[in-house]
Image (cartoon, rainbow, N blue to C red):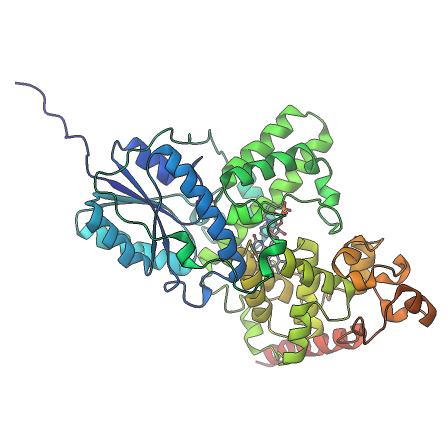
Length: 494
Ligand SMILES: Cc1cc2nc3c(=O)[nH]c(=O)nc-3n(C[C@H](O)[C@H](O)[C@H](O)COP(=O)(O)OP(=O)(O)OC[C@H]3O[C@@H](n4cnc5c(N)ncnc54)[C@H](O)[C@@H]3O)c2cc1C
């Protein structure tokens, strides 16, 4: 009598791509490629499930190009990418039926809506006898694995970071599959062009194109360039917006075109090769930012209202202002504070803003203008190519002083001093606010302090070619502190 073996699985497996638009070090794709089944790679444009957090305009531009790159890569492997639009639960079930798939696999996302949706899909598939597997998402450590000694979520970055450094062991990367077998019954794909992901505003994305190469190959080129050049001066250079001093990997990481673990491995490998202490310091400084990314995911997972509600509940009663004209001036980069306006214009033109400047523009919005942090978060959501629910919400709550590990509310950034410190010769302002380009460095961060003849010589007309400050710094600061005192007093009295 011959020994019985389990029959080899034969029905197709769907690989549901989401924020993991890559082939290398992709746990779900690796699982599928090793299963011996025909593989159906799928992307679903689900604008319904995320509700108010459906993908913004700049992200859609990125997605279009990233999907085009992924589709070309999958085509080369032998199994083309299938595109579907609509609610993901419906689209996945339809595809299972169309292809006769016996299994579905994906990499986890940690947005609250994604967790709820995916758990339901998994339960429904399993109830129908379909294998449903979820793999770790694009983080160094999944949010439930890094907890305090008491089993609680970390709310402070430094101990979180220490815990991450102590426990992160990436192991070797998962190989990129060499070939995929297409299913016999290949489903039809929608056409990417029909999704109209590219902006219809005529000139909005023209400034994105020269700066970015969405897709896995672009992500690796960016990482390799950064590690071989910019990284050597990262620790200090990362704060100078006029320099190309950071990696600009954020959209690549958000869309999962490169894994956070691969970034970690490559950074560690560089520090191991180049024995200089300065190299280690710069690499550590860079990887510390990658840990901030995990920290935000940790916050979003443990505090799912993070994008909408202040973590510090005291801020529920904060007396925010409503000032549509000031909000418009901020969005358009016409606040009269050059470093703020430079940042907002860099954002609009390139889909990205330097981290130091994100903090400065954010502070002006929520402190000097007293506008709700959610207004800034929304604008960033629509205009950033790296818009990320966790990082964006955590960043805004930090700025507003109501988040985890936030700077205290009474610390109000002075946009003039910040400009003078981090853009001393005004290179950044000159690039993004060309109407001030001819002002001497001494006045470039506060043009209203320049004598008339200096303004005239530089071709600056205050209130005509360039606005006067939308709010006086000292008055804005006082007003912010008074508003803060209000919620402090109310809570003290309660
Ligand atoms: C108000 C505000 C909103 C923000 N919104 C987003 C957002 O929507 N998406 C986003 O990816 N980042 C956001 N950030 C964080 C940060 O500004 C960007 O990640 C960074 O500027 C991206 O540039 P880089 O890739 O050159 O960063 P690098 O300095 O090269 O850092 C490497 C990587 O670390 C991560 N990282 C860096 N800084 C942070 C940080 N402070 N918090 C979390 N992760 C970080 C990013 O993935 C980044 O690509 C926000 C920050 C603030 C203050």
